[in-house]
Image (tube, rainbow, N blue to C red; front, side, top):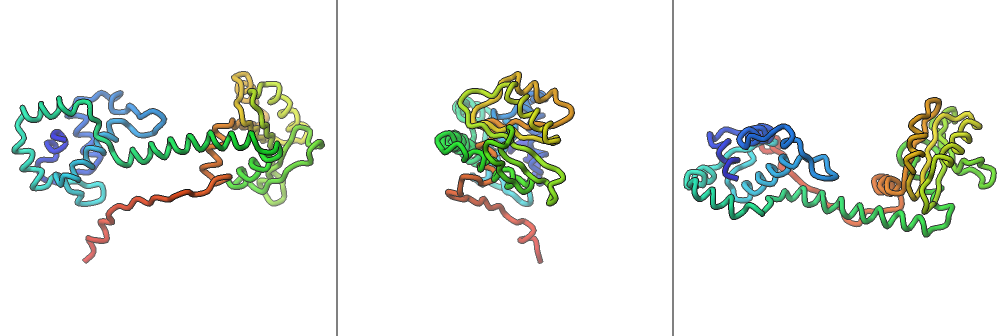
Length: 269
């Protein structure tokens, strides 16, 4: 917090990006340190820590947000900085060394990520316990929601390895064929080879193979080697994530809307 106040102590407004760069220089961070990300997140650790510190300084009224992503030290902040001696700063750093300044936005994002992860596991379990035809219906609805076109199920027993079809245009000139497997065991290369052969038999160049389990390494390598057609693989985890993202089989439990100041509103004459 003290270094943050120090670099903006001249009283002029600083953008959030300027502050991040100045603090990185202050701490002599390497490029690798600056670009280290949180696990399973696109956020940089250093950036989120600066954001958390900024939130705390605003809470204490040591800085003020004077514009869109524009921050300025307050009179209270200047007095606080002036009164803080180096020895006091050192003691504060030692005492709070084990405490992480947390950005509340990060807390909400991480909490949502954990809830979604648990929800995805429940979705896969539900699919596995449902009737075997349910997965095929889910897949068609999901691909339609994702904007790939109008879908239809094939007649069981006469599909030749095809469970559904997606017409990407109204005339059905361009189609995607779908295979869905509600399996516990992994899907191997032989299954993908059969699906690829079914596509060839129909003269189709695009396919989606979905399973509630997962694909073996040889299966993924086989698909990557294909040149005359494209087959997309979706395992159980990814299927559940897509269902959550596109609202298939789930409903909103509660919606939280975060507000921020509209600085242009207050600047109007």
